[in-house]
Length: 196
Image (cartoon, rainbow, N blue to C red; front, side):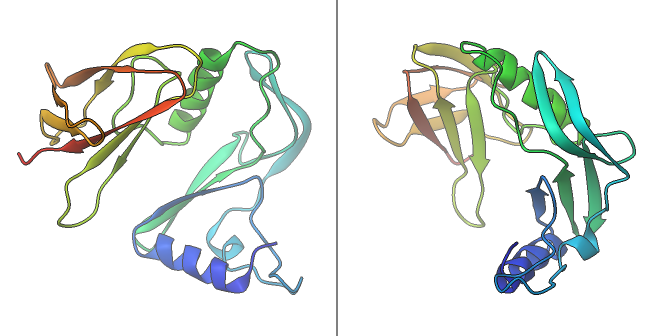
């Protein structure tokens, strides 16, 4: 279930060059429970379904849709694409395996053709690069763990070597295309790209 107006916006986003990731299933009804399959029309129906599926490292999902034997698929539409995952991400089977889970999710995303723009050498550290026309790029570096993490962030081609911390205005310079940075527990560092 997803409102018709929201389905229209998301479809327009894909048609205009956006990359949309959805799952475990594409909506078939609107907010009034009336048929509305605007996203299903640009997606792919699953080819089969598994009641239980072992994804490795102790991760198991129930009721997974498969697309030609894979847990995900990519559908080009307009100038963008819709990426479907046929399951809900499972809860880790035991505590203390954040790095294992991060590595597993990275491998799953890579199978779907999704690669991080600025990956961290430490798989527990999450990164996101935000871009907007006419504005400096902003790199978010998150540590969801309860200990301090020192990591190396590999910068995508074309990014500046020079970055400024949005909070304390400290300067950071990449060497060999990578930034070395420390991130305290449960913290998000925000770095703003300096002009190239």
